[in-house]
Length: 130
Image 1 (cartoon, rainbow, N blue to C red):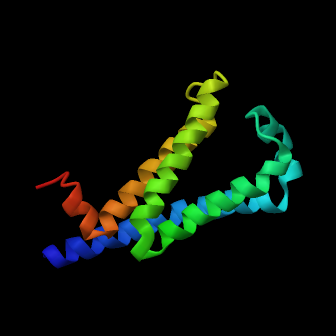
Image 2: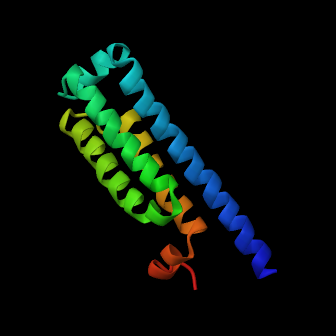
């Protein structure tokens, strides 16, 4: 019975992690392929349009590191830092509980929740349940 529960939580963890990777890759692609469509949002955050490819590259690297099991913990840490920076950027702009902040917090929770469910090492390091 424990193996079935473990397999289910691992599958749920992979699904959550897959959703996070999908969202990050889509965001990265949007910044790489069509930054002009995002120019108003990019400018509102204080970044210039020519920085969009670099931001997209950072997002993509975080997503790829997170997607690979051997580097998933490093990817989650870097992803958390990136999302925290995005949250702070919107907070600085006076956008408290704005949709971008909510998305960033949600992605962070899903990333760590997915990693927790799919990686026994993380469950050992962070024993939330006994």
